[in-house]
Image (tube, rainbow over all chains, first blue to last red; front, side, top):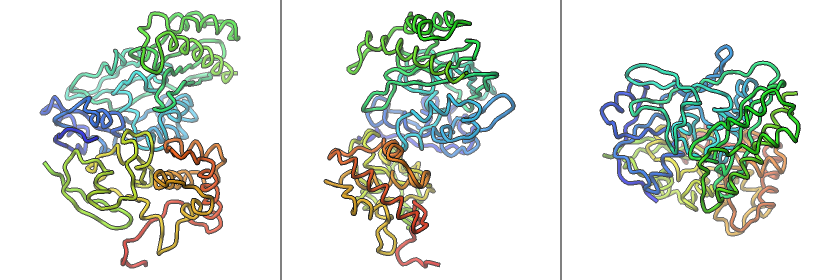
Length: 282
Length: 173
């Protein structure tokens, strides 16, 4: 499979990429290429211009900034998975990264590319929501911060404007005795999440959980979170709360999983993820 | 519009004008004639097209040749050094790690990536490390054994898992 012809532009800085995006508003941004290129090969998208961000080394970093872990948009899944900073401060993100695709995919794919692409079956969005991270977008107007809760707006859709580039992900380090888990029912062939659930829970049962793969965009099941708040996190209570995991979601349906089955998986994996996170909080 | 790229593959430097949409695997196979890198699924699933780029295993069907500009690449043709098989090749030979052989180049390159990061992997770690490579002959147990064989040889000979090939005829020191 060969993509349709396009013009290739390599940006050496964010400023240059923004300039290219201003002159070529139809251009697609290329980071690791592991979302965009498969779609171009299938001709699901045929951009006339592609702006390659892959050489902007200033966006390829992970560092700790006080109580925040900052990942540059070009940090690969492998960098996230293997980073001591991430593993120590926000282990949920490393656990999630390690479950994306396979080794080769994790060597090339980037956190910024995955989040901006917003595939409903991607893994990071659930973790990003459960961690209440902040996305930093840059445009010719400057930088702005978008909370995770406002970032994923629908199927392959985000709050990014057409002239904005996602440059950083800022993840607050959970305080106190906190446990987390990302559990995933992977499609056996593609490795994508049929359902993936991330949970971050404190020892006194305050926390967040989020699902991916279930609906058009990753989401936090409000009723599950409300019911868990301050509750005894035992099998029965968590199980009862998790019954609401797919409530209000327009559940995806495909050849592999019916909506009914997916909703069932969402309930099962929400229960398991919350219990695993609670266990780790102790 | 064609773009000029300069790449180093198995120690040899090449410069070509390529169309932006040319996939790296086609560049390697059809422009450089390095047909040891196979095209299996062409959808980032099977791993037959795995190569090492700047020390990291990647699937060359999901990269553009222009993205490889300036990189150092290793393909299966670069594993053997001075006529001696690389320990992973020896491992596949000794432990019957291949049947039809189609997945083998990708398997070996994914395996050297694994061994570079984890020189003494368990069976589970090997299977996890080769998760991105499919063998349709389903000879996975022999492949695991081959990787363990290679791990022992690399340790005995204190060799780096990922070799740095030199161009044929280039000075060795």
